[in-house]
Length: 313
Image (cartoon, rainbow, N blue to C red; front, side):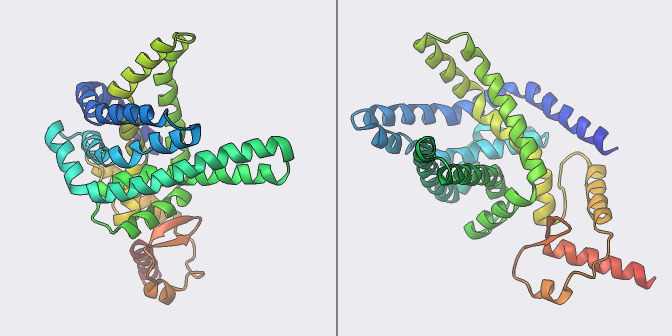
């Protein structure tokens, strides 16, 4: 049953994608056009300096343009829910309502990305010369980068969906980046396929720098960012809603919500004797690690109460 429901949901995603492709392209243009122009101008400025400063200057496009991604996220979230979306109104409201938090996210991402690029380059070079511990450091850099990538799958959608403080957004995203590894890797695999599909035309342009630049610009302007957002939201939205609210809140399928809640409870029908209920009640943490996954504290307490009620009946 779960497999059939997942297949049906994925078919819905594909159906929505191709039925709403014109809206996806328009959303893409609203984000990618300023992103491409600003990135190009920053790169021209950076070319006047050394390669290191060029990277530092060019990647300033992240804090400058990333707040616009709030609009992309809100549009693709609503499209994924099957809603009839007014692109301009939804995009603008997404940006105006969330630009401050997205600016903070972008500054953090800028420093993490820039430091990560230099760290990877440094340890990769040192590993070839010294080996040993340098390889360990290189692997550590890759794992941290993967963790941050998983966090930034959740951060945009969580920001436009909930009214949470910056601290709570970062904390919840960090927890889900680790606690939802199966979903995260499924999303990563699908996004890798999306990237490969978008990059396929480049194979036919190899050796022609102008053609590579033109095709890359077309993919950036018309396809990639909004498609990336729509696909990532598809994988993470249900689990994110379940973790934050205890409800899947997934649009069309009330049955899927009930199945998800039933599944969560069935998975936790084991003995709760290892849980210190009083400690959980007093805890200020939003999530508690139990049975190999992060569970919202209120949801865990509710399941424990239901278990106690069953025993008393």
